[in-house]
Length: 390
Image (cartoon, rainbow, N blue to C red; front, top):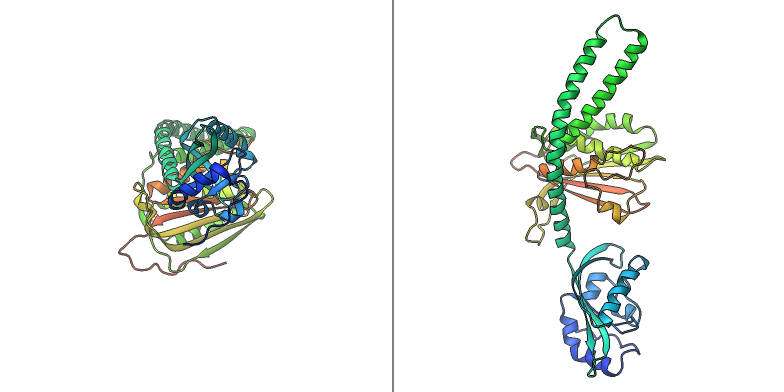
């Protein structure tokens, strides 16, 4: 067993005796265990804490908790005062950064340690890494919210789409008349254009509410991307450079080709909006074998052979707070009515409806990457070579 680092000067008297007595418990605890003296200095940093957070014991002993930053300091101090005054914490959910900056979800339990005269010697905290469980809970809540809002949105969109179809029909009848003056014809053309934009939004709502027929086909994503790139070059403008990297031996997936087109379009437009001064949008496909997750409630789509579609941009990126809400229906950071908040929630719904999974990586100033995993179809020969690397 490796030798522990020397104790800092603060460990003396009763506190030193307590730590020496419980050293075996601290070292064998599966949860990250920390102990702070009444001044807030670390006097125990267990091996599990090293594994969970990344800091070595010799780097942090005698100092403050390394994962408490200004944004969480007030919350930490309230909890610390509670424990020093004799209170306890049990199963409190918090988020804290590891040494590499990645936020992880933790379950915190804490209690005071007393000396023989009833005075508080230290506060001990147990921090269990529950990142996987928290992710599954968030996904479950998101799915329930999507289901409820989708039922409402789909019903409204279905009825509204019928009204728009009637409006469009009458508008076309009027436009066929030869007695319309040029100004009135121009106005009616604008009415038709607006009506069709509204119909496009209705179709998006119908997909979101699962009220649009889902016609699955066996597809090659390279073909779908090759067909979309020309349209995207026109839609995104000259300031956005499009790069593709398509695996020529890509596997096949089963999905609705119209829905796949919506995924590509929505993610590309989202990337364009994140690059107002221009940048690079990269589209990639590859075969991946996802490991089976250890959590008891993991969906089957999270493991096995999949095809990955990655859409990344070099834009402004997102804060963790925005990142946690991007798939919420009607949530948008765009101003002046530029966004409906349905694009990414529609993408999420389509991907899950297709039996797949979507992951997002983003940091402020470092761009964003969406990775979509769709199950690879078994029983088909390898895909023919399609698409070229640019």
